[in-house]
Image (cartoon, rainbow, N blue to C red; front, side, top):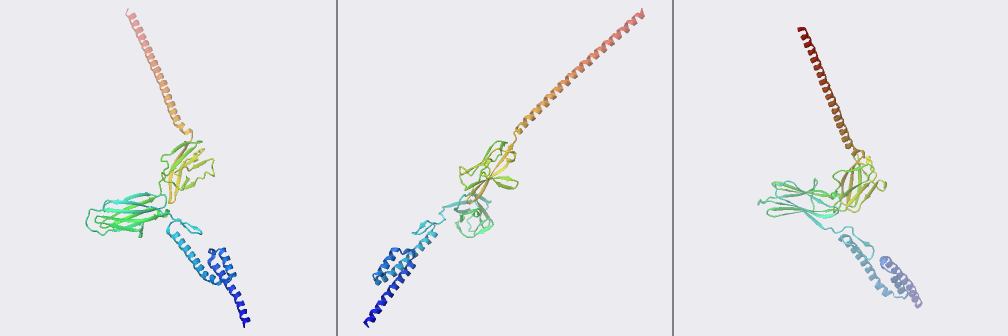
Length: 371
């Protein structure tokens, strides 16, 4: 029996070692990257040293600790992606793309319920959080129910609208986030009681300043056209030439001998056209591209031939030549007229002398007969 018992104990020891090894492998699979090589080597050493009791006590604790680490990692990632701030864990770095934008408030104060439509232009070049508000003051002390409505174009806005009212002042606010081009446009507040008043906010990208008067240059010369966006800096500038009803983009890299586009400083753009021809004349469009949309400026170019400035000179010279010719002809005519007048006068004198002589002969003959 003793031999049988010792044999049984001898068989139990290898089985116990195999079960402990299986438990260690299972823990390694559960703990994943948080269980290090050093801890695995220590557990293997404990098995070899036949200390199963301590290992069985510590193993559940390690499994719980590993689960807690995973839970903390998940919570940290959740806070990082939802809180709006940049946070990181011991593992990969997660960064949110949304940044905190300050609120900008714009108000239209309406004098009364008999006021005409009031409009306000708001310039935005980048994403923003804004609050639009309309305020109506009335001298009337009657408590009238005022219906307040916000619209974008023709669509009624339902969310993010608040209202306040006191004894003689009614106001309504609309908070919105401007993130892309489709968020721009016209927002209208409508207050309706016994009468209705309206106010409109126009959200636009910055205005681009081109050249109001045409630029005049000559064939063979070079010209520089400039557009600017004031204090606003666009993402990029694009130049177009107008061909009928189409805009054709100008690529200076494909025709460096013809066009040079300079985009410095960032709020200005310069287009230089070299070796001008008559075909280069026309309308040019400079487009500024912002995060919230685009806006255009225009420059009109007139290319003249060098003979064009001489045309007025030729016209004046022709007029002078004609005038001199007329004066010359008039002088000739006057001289001829004077000569004719003198000839007629001489002829009259000769005729008069002849008549006098004939009269003298007749008188003398008469005298001789009387004698």
